[in-house]
Image (cartoon, rainbow, N blue to C red):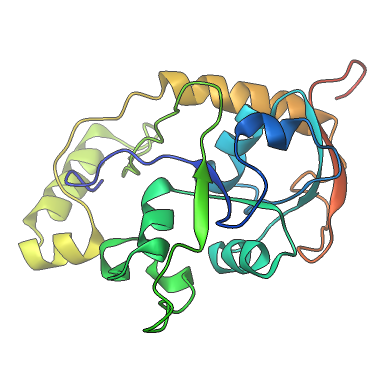
Length: 217
């Protein structure tokens, strides 16, 4: 894990000139288009769906971070999802993407002369959900001696390598809240036509009902 990294978050965002000003404007509009990330992303799929539980929207799935930004910027999507820090960087007069693990997937920095806010964050009405830091876990199916050898090897690596690989000594994150998120989203996915085991086109917006229905498996 990266002990120096803080827990992440997930927020909704719109263009700065959007008429959407609060979360209720999102959930009360079934024709609204939202760009979501890939199906295994906590930040751009699981946490947003948790907040959207009980709503119906038009959704685009399996977008990269870059595609989410671009869809909202261009007006193809009304709403996108990202971390609050990422939105701050996109609106900053001095973007510094090197500080983020999203750097491989961000759009180009805003050109000089155009340094003004282009996105606006919309906070969900539910509580903020911290996204646990990533970690390195060793399978309990291997022997204790093998586990000890792996740990020893990892921490014998030079500090420069550990920093580059973004791992170090740390405590296991608390997954209590995220288990709740996962459970609710899995209820939604049982009834979904956009499950990760089915082919979807990120360029299409699909009618989506983000709630549990009886009779699904």
